[in-house]
Length: 483
Image (cartoon, rainbow, N blue to C red; front, side, top):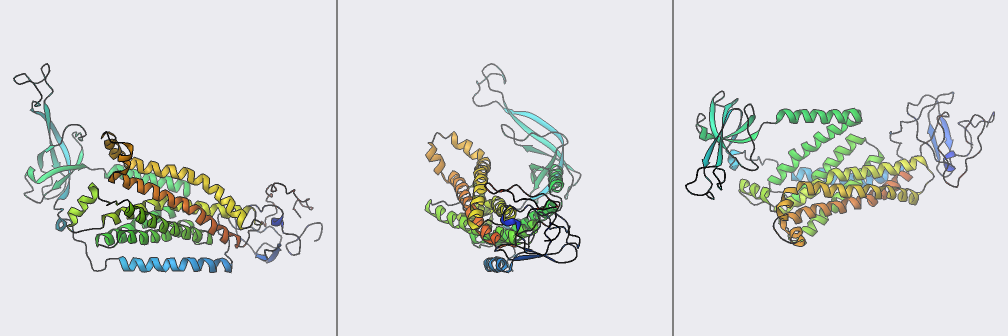
């Protein structure tokens, strides 16, 4: 130590053993080499400018993984990655082309059209009216109203021609106005006849496109390059679902197995693309995949014990269209696994990052301290996520819950009915998987982070963090640096 100031070379005490080490500053590392020795932590080779104000890694940058960390993560990840890739290749329906819509009984073709006229007329007096009285008279219910719309087709074989079509009326029926953009279902018969068409939906491509642009803009404005990576990961997630998961299930493969393999593939792609290749991300991947397996096993066991069939209106329509048997309970289980993916990603990444930042703040902490700190953060996170998951599934099943609330059945009968019990299974099994992800991911993150190369603060202008409770600051050496 010369001039009252400890240099980069020497055997002075490592500050991280006495007070928490602050976050590293951002920038690049320059020329030259130096050593920083600590107690029980070995030494770290750092690059800095010759005059001593070298710049550290960025706050969000990944610290270099030690050889031990790489061996642990490789032993955990490589078998999971290999199983995921082999499973995807094995489950993909090579050479099994899915029949197009007409071959599956979906013989209609969508045709874009525009409403040019709307007319209403009385269909007749309601049977509850008084015979012989005038419509609308005292004690007579108003007559039923029949609605017809005249539409001009903007595409298809009869583009530019108009047809008049009846549409549904009454409570809950959509209301049409001149200028509405609608979608017609064309049966394939004579294109000039109105009987060949049926109004099935509104065109909503423009507002949905604007919403997508607004969504992407919000993500990019806040996340910038990280947001762009997140958008790319989202697109790849949909690609995995469309290219692998849906064709494999339609080809008759086990839906639960397909969902687990597809979910694992999505997690590998999404987490590494969004958060980068690092020991931190790899830890989150292992925690996510472990929790996915737990969710799948719980869903399979309790759905069998509760004798849930997975059959609902949408599934019944699918079976009718396919014309062959399909594992409806497996579809239910696949939905549970895929539905939990997004929230599970949030839990594991947050827990891993929390443990890493605690380790960054105080490299002297051991596994127990890191695990305890991560668990405290995880409890608060899980408390909010559990309620979020319940509200998501409740909102999706709201119309069904409203209908069942009018049935006059007891709460127990309602909750154990097939359709409601399926939503209860999704909620409870998904929540148990999320809760299990906290200790699993936190324990693994503490184990890996403790073996990471501890970050060093090499910018002398960066102030030190306050001391830990019960640990007074050491006296300052000349120049303001802690000894």
